[in-house]
Image (tube, rainbow over all chains, first blue to last red; front, side):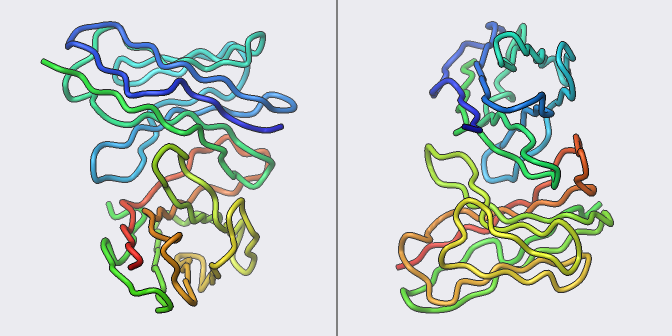
Length: 112
Length: 115
């Protein structure tokens, strides 16, 4: 099928810890992949994207690499801050009309 | 810097009432989308409009209708609200999608409760 699966949360880390949020996808071909972030009470914002295999998207210290061999797009950050506390969504393009398929979201809580 | 604007931000309805959620974008995007967000289920596509004058069903269209009023505006209507439609609704827009790798831009959401 066509789906996106994220690791279940919540993820609780101390400030400056290393973050990994796993994301895997199923698809025919190599769709563009995205990470979105949702801060409390707000809509989703694009965090980073990768449009082809082996691409690395990066923004605000976050990175994710498009791995076609493992059909994965894991989100990483070397040193998280309290301000990174949010819900993170992995998503992939579906078809040719720009539709997105989202994972279920992973809540990150960073404690001082 | 408005981007995607949704109104209202909050609404409480009684079962059976009707309501229209409004969405407008000022980025000259052709494609617009309506999602609902429920705990543990991510965002699910209700309806989308690939271009002005066209609308198509998404994953969970039952109980909803949409109107693409013009290029800027895409409204979502609940004709007879049910408690199962209690959710947070998000509107989004994007650049035309042929072979698209462009991200969607989201509004801040409408929090809807059906009693």
